[in-house]
Length: 247
Image (cartoon, rainbow, N blue to C red; front, side, top):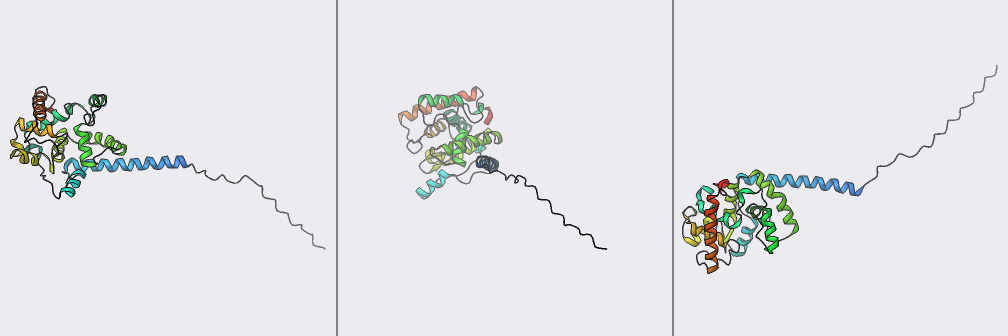
């Protein structure tokens, strides 16, 4: 009996389907994602730096380093707030930032007044100056201003007002190669910062906007007048409670 022929089944043709969609690369979305990640990393790094100097005294600043490089040496010694005469703390607040105890890092009324009058420095609070001096650099740029705007609230949120003022009085330039109140008190008046009189404190504070050209030990008529106003302002903020946050 003849074997039955079995016909080979023709394999069915594979159905041609649509090729799997490849993931579309969206450059803008990718860029935004990485920019956000970078921003978070930078913010975390800045916050860590701010928290570090909440308790650790800054060993130097960009301004101190650059002046030391230019002059060969600078006069500076750190002193705690407890070793500074209270009149000095009040004088610098009266001179630089009378609403220091009432703002969160930015004095909007002072900023508006400074813009209206065309002032270059008047709107900057002590907190902003600490951020600029300790963490950033001098000079004007949008990058520095943006970093300052981010870091100032961080400092205000994590440091006490007394700590902010203590750091400011230890890093501020107070003369040619003279940094901090300890060096200024000895350099101009031959006393320690704890022994400064209200008049001497006011003269040092009056020189802060232009320390290289204003000499508290040999004040001009303008500097004497400015110091009298600061001395009066320091007494006023003591009386009305605007110095309570750092005393």
